[in-house]
Image (cartoon, rainbow over all chains, first blue to last red):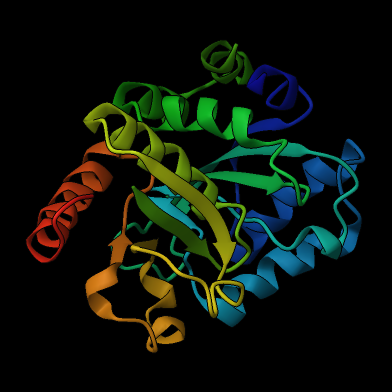
Length: 145
Length: 99
Protein backbone atom coordinates (compact mmCIF):
# COMPACT_ATOMS: atom_id res chain seq x y z
CA UNK A 1 0.00 0.00 0.00
CA UNK A 2 1.28 3.42 -0.93
CA UNK A 3 0.02 4.82 2.39
CA UNK A 4 2.66 2.63 4.06
CA UNK A 5 5.35 4.58 2.19
CA UNK A 6 3.91 8.08 1.85
CA UNK A 7 3.28 8.99 5.48
CA UNK A 8 3.97 11.73 8.01
CA UNK A 9 7.67 10.83 8.06
CA UNK A 10 8.15 10.98 4.31
CA UNK A 11 6.09 14.01 3.27
CA UNK A 12 7.15 17.67 3.56
CA UNK A 13 5.53 20.68 1.92
CA UNK A 14 6.59 24.14 0.70
CA UNK A 15 10.28 23.37 0.88
CA UNK A 16 12.62 26.16 -0.09
CA UNK A 17 15.30 25.10 -2.54
CA UNK A 18 17.54 27.02 -4.93
CA UNK A 19 17.97 24.31 -7.57
CA UNK A 20 17.15 20.72 -8.58
CA UNK A 21 20.10 19.20 -6.69
CA UNK A 22 18.88 20.69 -3.44
CA UNK A 23 15.40 19.37 -4.19
CA UNK A 24 16.75 15.83 -4.56
CA UNK A 25 18.80 16.21 -1.36
CA UNK A 26 15.74 17.33 0.62
CA UNK A 27 13.64 14.42 -0.64
CA UNK A 28 16.53 12.00 -0.22
CA UNK A 29 17.13 13.05 3.36
CA UNK A 30 13.62 11.93 4.29
CA UNK A 31 14.42 8.46 2.94
CA UNK A 32 17.69 8.46 4.85
CA UNK A 33 15.90 9.46 8.05
CA UNK A 34 13.59 6.46 7.88
CA UNK A 35 16.46 4.11 7.16
CA UNK A 36 15.46 3.27 3.59
CA UNK A 37 18.78 4.36 2.10
CA UNK A 38 22.41 5.10 2.83
CA UNK A 39 23.52 8.70 2.39
CA UNK A 40 25.41 7.78 -0.80
CA UNK A 41 22.15 6.95 -2.55
CA UNK A 42 21.26 10.67 -2.51
CA UNK A 43 24.41 11.50 -4.45
CA UNK A 44 23.69 8.62 -6.82
CA UNK A 45 20.26 10.09 -7.62
CA UNK A 46 21.91 13.43 -8.44
CA UNK A 47 24.67 11.77 -10.46
CA UNK A 48 22.11 9.84 -12.54
CA UNK A 49 20.62 13.13 -13.76
CA UNK A 50 24.07 14.55 -14.48
CA UNK A 51 25.09 11.43 -16.40
CA UNK A 52 21.95 10.62 -18.34
CA UNK A 53 19.86 13.79 -18.28
CA UNK A 54 16.63 14.95 -16.67
CA UNK A 55 14.66 11.85 -17.66
CA UNK A 56 13.32 11.62 -14.12
CA UNK A 57 10.93 14.51 -14.79
CA UNK A 58 8.15 12.14 -15.74
CA UNK A 59 5.29 14.57 -16.26
CA UNK A 60 4.74 18.34 -16.18
CA UNK A 61 5.87 19.59 -12.79
CA UNK A 62 6.65 16.13 -11.38
CA UNK A 63 10.07 14.54 -10.89
CA UNK A 64 10.81 11.04 -9.59
CA UNK A 65 14.50 10.88 -8.70
CA UNK A 66 15.89 7.37 -8.21
CA UNK A 67 19.12 5.47 -8.72
CA UNK A 68 20.44 1.96 -8.92
CA UNK A 69 19.51 -0.12 -5.85
CA UNK A 70 23.15 -1.10 -5.35
CA UNK A 71 23.94 2.58 -4.70
CA UNK A 72 22.60 2.24 -1.15
CA UNK A 73 18.99 1.10 -0.94
CA UNK A 74 18.27 -0.72 2.33
CA UNK A 75 14.52 -1.15 1.90
CA UNK A 76 11.65 0.05 -0.29
CA UNK A 77 10.87 3.72 0.30
CA UNK A 78 9.20 6.74 -1.24
CA UNK A 79 9.22 10.38 -0.14
CA UNK A 80 7.24 13.34 -1.43
CA UNK A 81 8.08 17.01 -1.13
CA UNK A 82 6.44 20.05 -2.66
CA UNK A 83 8.57 23.07 -3.49
CA UNK A 84 7.76 26.61 -2.46
CA UNK A 85 9.10 27.88 -5.77
CA UNK A 86 9.36 25.41 -8.67
CA UNK A 87 12.83 24.63 -10.03
CA UNK A 88 14.03 23.60 -13.48
CA UNK A 89 15.64 20.18 -13.98
CA UNK A 90 16.52 20.91 -17.61
CA UNK A 91 13.60 18.93 -19.09
CA UNK A 92 12.07 21.25 -21.65
CA UNK A 93 8.71 19.48 -21.88
CA UNK A 94 8.02 19.09 -18.19
CA UNK A 95 9.85 21.86 -16.31
CA UNK A 96 9.50 23.54 -13.89
CA UNK A 97 9.10 20.97 -11.14
CA UNK A 98 7.14 21.50 -7.97
CA UNK A 99 6.50 17.91 -6.80
CA UNK A 100 9.49 15.64 -6.13
CA UNK A 101 8.90 11.95 -5.36
CA UNK A 102 12.15 10.21 -4.42
CA UNK A 103 12.10 6.46 -4.94
CA UNK A 104 14.27 3.84 -3.30
CA UNK A 105 13.47 0.58 -5.02
CA UNK A 106 14.98 -2.86 -4.77
CA UNK A 107 15.85 -4.97 -7.78
CA UNK A 108 12.78 -7.16 -7.72
CA UNK A 109 9.37 -5.78 -8.56
CA UNK A 110 8.14 -5.37 -5.01
CA UNK A 111 7.34 -1.70 -5.69
CA UNK A 112 5.03 -2.42 -8.63
CA UNK A 113 1.89 -2.17 -6.48
CA UNK A 114 2.94 1.15 -4.93
CA UNK A 115 3.93 2.59 -8.29
CA UNK A 116 0.54 1.61 -9.71
CA UNK A 117 -1.12 3.52 -6.89
CA UNK A 118 1.22 6.48 -7.44
CA UNK A 119 0.32 6.50 -11.15
CA UNK A 120 -3.38 6.58 -10.29
CA UNK A 121 -2.89 9.60 -8.05
CA UNK A 122 -0.39 11.58 -10.12
CA UNK A 123 -2.34 10.84 -13.30
CA UNK A 124 -5.27 12.76 -11.82
CA UNK A 125 -5.03 16.50 -12.53
CA UNK A 126 -7.18 17.56 -9.58
CA UNK A 127 -5.20 15.49 -7.13
CA UNK A 128 -1.92 16.84 -8.49
CA UNK A 129 -3.22 20.39 -8.07
CA UNK A 130 -4.31 19.61 -4.50
CA UNK A 131 -0.86 18.24 -3.69
CA UNK A 132 0.87 21.30 -5.25
CA UNK A 133 -1.36 23.70 -3.35
CA UNK A 134 -1.39 21.77 -0.07
CA UNK A 135 -0.89 24.03 2.94
CA UNK A 136 -0.55 21.14 5.40
CA UNK A 137 1.11 17.74 5.30
CA UNK A 138 -2.23 16.21 6.27
CA UNK A 139 -3.80 17.42 3.01
CA UNK A 140 -1.24 15.37 1.11
CA UNK A 141 -1.61 12.36 3.39
CA UNK A 142 -5.39 12.38 2.88
CA UNK A 143 -4.87 12.05 -0.88
CA UNK A 144 -2.58 9.04 -0.38
CA UNK A 145 -4.65 7.34 2.31
CA UNK B 1 1.32 -11.57 -29.29
CA UNK B 2 3.42 -8.46 -28.71
CA UNK B 3 6.77 -8.62 -26.98
CA UNK B 4 7.54 -5.22 -25.51
CA UNK B 5 10.37 -3.85 -23.42
CA UNK B 6 9.83 -0.68 -21.41
CA UNK B 7 13.29 0.76 -21.08
CA UNK B 8 14.84 3.34 -18.77
CA UNK B 9 18.37 3.86 -17.51
CA UNK B 10 17.82 1.80 -14.34
CA UNK B 11 14.93 -0.33 -15.51
CA UNK B 12 12.86 0.37 -12.42
CA UNK B 13 11.45 3.90 -12.42
CA UNK B 14 9.89 5.21 -15.59
CA UNK B 15 10.10 1.80 -17.24
CA UNK B 16 8.06 0.27 -14.43
CA UNK B 17 5.44 3.00 -14.72
CA UNK B 18 5.35 2.57 -18.50
CA UNK B 19 4.87 -1.18 -18.04
CA UNK B 20 1.82 -0.61 -15.83
CA UNK B 21 0.21 1.58 -18.51
CA UNK B 22 1.21 -0.53 -21.50
CA UNK B 23 -0.15 -3.72 -19.98
CA UNK B 24 -3.45 -2.14 -19.11
CA UNK B 25 -3.84 -0.62 -22.59
CA UNK B 26 -3.04 -3.92 -24.36
CA UNK B 27 -5.24 -5.93 -22.04
CA UNK B 28 -8.07 -3.52 -22.76
CA UNK B 29 -7.51 -3.92 -26.51
CA UNK B 30 -7.46 -7.68 -26.08
CA UNK B 31 -3.94 -8.03 -27.44
CA UNK B 32 -1.88 -10.79 -25.97
CA UNK B 33 1.29 -9.28 -24.57
CA UNK B 34 4.52 -9.89 -22.75
CA UNK B 35 5.81 -6.63 -21.26
CA UNK B 36 9.12 -6.53 -19.45
CA UNK B 37 11.11 -3.71 -17.91
CA UNK B 38 14.76 -3.40 -18.78
CA UNK B 39 17.77 -1.20 -18.28
CA UNK B 40 19.20 0.27 -21.44
CA UNK B 41 22.11 -2.16 -21.53
CA UNK B 42 20.11 -5.35 -21.02
CA UNK B 43 18.05 -5.30 -24.22
CA UNK B 44 21.09 -6.02 -26.37
CA UNK B 45 20.50 -9.19 -28.33
CA UNK B 46 16.90 -9.53 -27.19
CA UNK B 47 13.97 -10.05 -29.55
CA UNK B 48 11.05 -7.66 -29.30
CA UNK B 49 8.29 -5.96 -31.28
CA UNK B 50 8.43 -2.59 -29.55
CA UNK B 51 10.42 -0.55 -27.08
CA UNK B 52 8.80 2.13 -24.95
CA UNK B 53 11.22 4.61 -23.45
CA UNK B 54 12.23 8.17 -22.58
CA UNK B 55 13.53 10.82 -24.98
CA UNK B 56 16.78 11.03 -22.99
CA UNK B 57 17.79 7.56 -24.23
CA UNK B 58 17.45 8.40 -27.90
CA UNK B 59 21.22 8.37 -28.43
CA UNK B 60 21.77 5.16 -26.47
CA UNK B 61 19.19 3.38 -28.62
CA UNK B 62 20.54 4.52 -31.98
CA UNK B 63 21.30 0.97 -33.05
CA UNK B 64 17.63 0.00 -32.83
CA UNK B 65 15.16 0.38 -35.71
CA UNK B 66 13.36 3.70 -34.97
CA UNK B 67 10.14 2.12 -36.21
CA UNK B 68 10.21 -0.07 -33.14
CA UNK B 69 10.59 2.73 -30.59
CA UNK B 70 7.96 4.84 -28.82
CA UNK B 71 9.13 7.84 -26.83
CA UNK B 72 6.99 9.01 -23.92
CA UNK B 73 7.09 12.49 -22.41
CA UNK B 74 4.35 12.26 -19.77
CA UNK B 75 4.40 9.01 -17.81
CA UNK B 76 1.40 9.85 -15.70
CA UNK B 77 -0.88 10.42 -18.67
CA UNK B 78 -2.29 7.13 -19.82
CA UNK B 79 -3.86 8.82 -22.87
CA UNK B 80 -0.46 9.70 -24.33
CA UNK B 81 0.85 6.17 -24.00
CA UNK B 82 -2.40 4.67 -25.27
CA UNK B 83 -2.52 6.94 -28.34
CA UNK B 84 1.10 6.34 -29.32
CA UNK B 85 0.76 2.61 -28.75
CA UNK B 86 -2.36 2.28 -30.90
CA UNK B 87 -0.74 4.26 -33.75
CA UNK B 88 2.29 1.99 -33.63
CA UNK B 89 0.20 -1.18 -33.55
CA UNK B 90 -1.69 -0.01 -36.65
CA UNK B 91 1.69 0.38 -38.40
CA UNK B 92 2.77 -3.06 -37.28
CA UNK B 93 -0.44 -4.59 -38.64
CA UNK B 94 0.46 -3.37 -42.12
CA UNK B 95 3.57 -5.50 -42.09
CA UNK B 96 2.33 -8.70 -40.51
CA UNK B 97 -0.78 -10.77 -40.73
CA UNK B 98 -1.44 -11.14 -37.06
CA UNK B 99 -0.46 -9.47 -33.80
